[in-house]
Every structure is written in structure tokens, then in C-alpha cells.
Length: 318
Image (tube, rainbow, N blue to C red):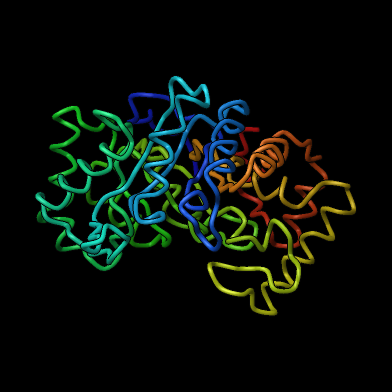
């Protein structure tokens, strides 16, 4: 990337660290109400006052918990993002049922209204179109015009896309006026996909970038046998690469998860990293990881081993 990045489209500043709430919705294992409350309180205390959620996280559970627990946790001015494009259809007994896609304006509005009810809010800071990889025609015809109208009406302050694949996401940034994107798992020590097209494009357009999935579902937090990688058990090759990365970090007495958290923030186009946590202890550990000193020599060693692209060290903003 050359030249100065364009001015950001966002009408507010994102905190550098945010809390991803998929674990509070029960991703992989249930989280009790007390642990959920302690997690949100710890996030606020650590300055992680950006909270990313979605209706699909626990069939609305994560949103309901945020709506109920933010004020008691003392978080008075949070930045909240949620997502749309999928509708929850509970069973007649009220228990969670199916989740269906709906990219029509009616569906987009129904999704947002339901999210606002669960969150106990009259408006939201960011509304992402959630995983629209396979629906480019629907996005162009109905979904993007719908979220843009919601922004114009003041029901949301910023709009964008939240996805796991940077190629389709870059196409949407190129085609539409996008305030912010959330890219998960594609800007990590093991996956540099977002660097090729997405981040340079966002730098040129002033599109804010939020990075999630920095641990690739856990492997880069603890590369042990049985670790998860991109929502599946880690294959042998990925596990070995993560172990090599950890060995380099260990040589400098730096925890691998500290390097994993700080890595995306080397890029000047990245505004925030969201970290999924299921306990106050995880919040505290991740906040400490973001502050842990990483010597320049380690970054250089990681670059030589292929974990950090050289270009990031040349343009790092610290």
C-alpha cells in the first residue's frame, strides 16, 4: 500500500479491542448467566467497549444478554454491532427453531427490529449484512438498498458486511458505499488472504476494518492436539505450523496469543480486533495479550518464517 489511507467513513471511532459475543451465545459450549455477566463487566473494565453480536449467536441469546447485562456491568457508552440477512423462526413452544435467509427489505427490517428489541435499544451503531457470499443478486437488488435506507433513517449509524472470505467481501466494497467491514479468520499468523485485495481496497476507500477470528478458532491461542482450526479440528499441517510459530515466540518469552492479537493491528487499515471470550479470565488474558511487549526482532523472525508479511513491518503503525 502506498500513500496516505483515505479518511474513514465511520461517524465514530472504534475501540482498538472489542468483545465478540458468539461464545456468550453458546458457541461450542454453554456459558451460564453469571459467567456471561462477568465477561461483559470485565470487557468494559478492560476498555473493550465495542461489542459485536448477531441474531444467529445462540438464536438471539447473545443479543438478549448484551441488552440485559451492559448497564449492570457499568458500560455506559458502548459501540454495538449486530447483523442481518437471517431470520430466527422459533418453534411454537418458544424454543429455538430454524434460521432462514431473507435478504428482502421486509426481512432486513424485521431482523433489525427483533435485534433492537433483544438489545433494548432504539438504534444500533453498526449493521452488517451477515455472510452474503452466495447472494450477490439479492444484495444488489434489495439488501444493500435496505440497509442504506436504515442508515438514512437513523436506525443504524454505519453499514457494512461481515464475512469469512475476503474475495467476495472485497467485491462488495468495490461495488457499494461501505462504512465498515468485519473479516473473520483471514488476517491471522496462519492466513494472510485479506492482505491481497481487501485491505488495500479498504485503505483507498476509507472503509473501516474490523478483524475477528485472530486465533483461527483456537489453534493460535494454544496449538495443542485436538485444537480447533477454522471451526474444525486442526489438520496436521496447520497444527505443525502453529507449533513452529509458538516455538519462535517462546524463544523471546512472548505468548503466541499476544502475537496473534497484535498481528492484525500492524496494518494501518485495521481499526479494531474483536475477540470472542466466554469468561472474565479470558477477557483479562486477551486484554493483557494486546499490551504485551513484542520486540521488533521477534516480528522480523516471524516474517522470515512466513508468519508475518514483510510489507506489514514496513508500514506498521505500532
